[in-house]
Length: 137
Length: 140
Image 1: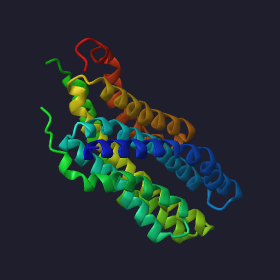
Image 2 (image 1 turned 120 degrees about the vertical axis):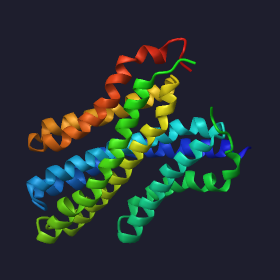
Image 3 (image 1 turned 135 degrees about the vertical axis):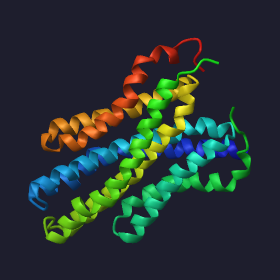
């Protein structure tokens, strides 16, 4: 199997996992980590509104980033150089975020998922970088 | 080859605005909305403070990535690629919907959140107006 095909499927897998992760993020974590602490008075009400808005934005952004990875996988399959750089940005961003948060807050074990989602794409992307030589246009 | 420069440039403007919005979101918003309240004791539970910090950083990163995606697909939008239209529609609806829903839910934050509505609409309106270009024979 060619390197670009492996990277294409890795990006699709990362994207699909990321999109699926919005289910626990929005439906379980939002009530438990945002609404409950606000109801318990563990942070003031004004701050609770900001916290809620940022959480909802993060849920939306998880879906959009996952969809972006699935979108770019089509161009990765063709071995396009531009798609390699875009995927480096997407998977590098997820990996750095996951690594940073796991180092800063080791007790936040669920954030390791973002590190894994990033690495699923980043590792084959770097290993098979020679497979991406097609310049569109 | 047929092309649509309006949709392309609107996606580019939205993407650049979204990427630029990351700067105040991270460098001004994080200290003001997260770190100071933690220092002032307005968040009594340290775990909640940590979660707030984590989600803020994640939002900053993904905001930048969404902007970069809009820039990336803008060339495909220019050359009437149908799947790029679908992704632009998803991003446009998502950002506009987020901006509108938070503005309605929290009217006191409407001025701030309307920026998201504006960024989303810049992409969404031309994507909807020119949808026939992406569904016709010239689309790829």
